[in-house]
Image 1 (cartoon, rainbow, N blue to C red):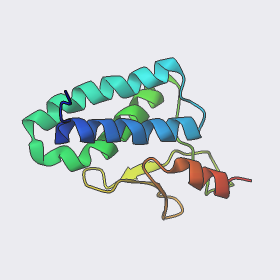
Image 2 (spheres, rainbow, N blue to C red):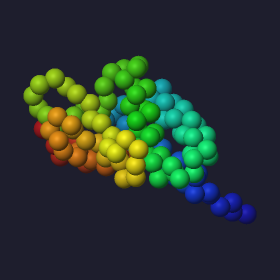
Image 3 (cartoon, rainbow, N blue to C red):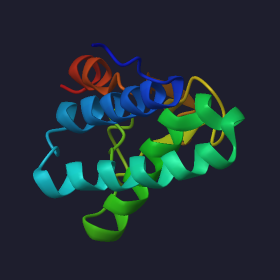
Image 4 (tube, rainbow, N blue to C red):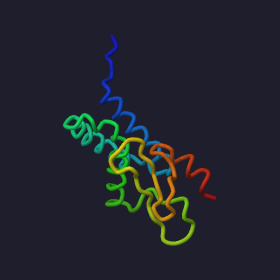
Length: 127
């Protein structure tokens, strides 16, 4: 007997998968880091239950949550692959609260990759 997966659960699973793909691409998907993703998903489940219209913002919010948690524990992530000189800096999520989130470099003024697609961006941009 199949139980249909709700749109909320589908969105949460998609957000988790996208952020995990970026963590794997940057080789930081250790167990403690994956736990940060799970903690964010739990918090965001509650958040979107309170504001159902925010379901399309989940991927960007989970990515921001994980980025913030990593900064507190380990340092900046993900580092920009575009700027080869100067101080290392992290990419940022744009839009901060909106659909179709991307990792962007504000110093170079470019979109680097969609959330979930850092593997391709880093694979082709870093020598």
